[in-house]
Image (cartoon, rainbow, N blue to C red; front, side, top):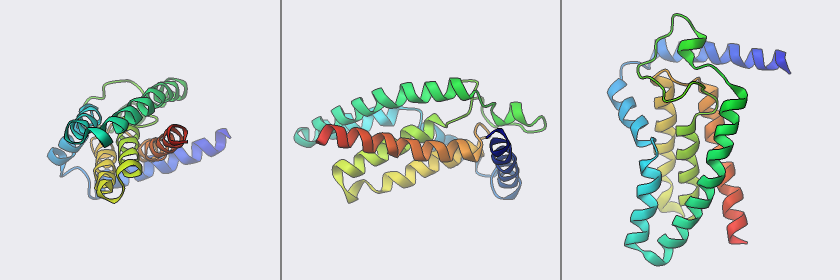
Length: 175
C-alpha cells in the first residue's frame, strides 16, 4: 500500500509541476476570485437566499445543506488530520504558492469538497437549473491547484467526497 501511495504522490508531483509550468500561473487574479467563492460564504448564502425567495422549497433545501455539512466537516477534519499530507510548498522545496493556506495539511481539498457537496445537493433538490454549480465547483478546485495550496489528487478527492456525502445525506433524508 505504501508503494502505491508513493507512486500516486510521484504522479501528483509531476502533474502539479507540469500544470504550473504549462498553462497555470498566468490567471492568478481569476484563481484568487474563484478560490474565495469557495471559502464557505456561498454555501451559506445560496441556501438562505433560496429559502427567502421560495420558502416552500428553500426551507427543506436549507435543512438538507445543514445536515450534509454537519457530516462533511467532521469527515474533512478527520481526513486532514489523519493523512497529514504536506502542502505543495512544504513538499517541494523549490515550489512557491501564490497564497497562504489557512491550515497545515492539504488532503483533501476542503474548498473543493464543500463546493461539490453544494453543487450536488442543489442539483438533487432543484434539478437541471442547478447544474452550472458544477462548473463553479470545478473552478474552485482548479483554483486551489493554480494557487499552489493543493496537489491535483487533493482536489480530485474533494470532488469525489463532496458528492458522495451529498448522495448519502439526500438519500437518508428523502427516504
